[in-house]
Image 1 (cartoon, rainbow, N blue to C red):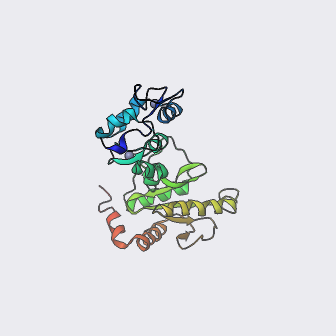
Image 2: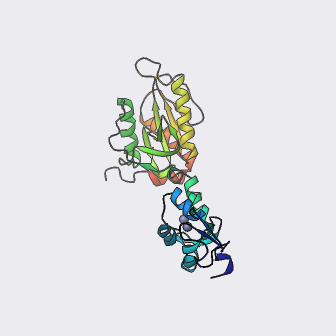
Image 3: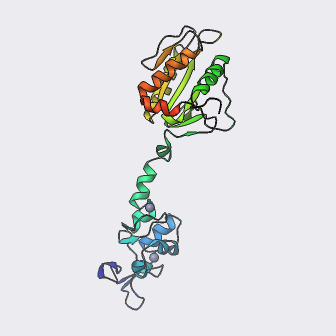
Length: 259
Ligand SMILES: [Zn+2]
Ligand SMILES: [Zn+2]
């Protein structure tokens, strides 16, 4: 044990028994030592603290009274050992790697990951179903994903639910139609569509918007269409090739549709 690790002010003894030995104490304070006070405040025991310190510091920490004293600690999550004061260890993550992880929400690492959201029911129009069917005849479309994790929230959820998801090329397809009352996808809906696209682009996805029934183009990735036909599917695949490259599309194509 080195000199720094021995408690300072060895002539002072605290009520908790820490500090100077009873025989050597000039002053005995009727309160707990600072470390025991911080343990009480943070609802931890000294035994719990001792389990976290590196073995060579255990004896010193058992008698430690100073919350500013520095020790080497073992991260409970298996990161490398780190140097920190008793105060830092008791009041924060202590471990710099754990602190970094705490600042970055777990969702940051999952942004862009497509997944299956069970029980997700979205109204699907016949035109959209037909588009999915025609597209599925040309390329492999997975049925096991219906949502994509994003790095922000969209209508309070950390995910979006595009109409059609092609995970192999990170492309989502939205089929936009004004619907029966001709007002959907205009005004506020358009703002929210753009926000949805931005949320997906942020996590590495491109969105192709099929604009049907008189809707105008929303940008370079919009396809204004008069109807769901094989020609529309060709246009979509051409656009995927423009975005991700012809090789990426070639890899998607069903070699043998009857298979
Ligand atoms: Zn104490
Ligand atoms: Zn850690």
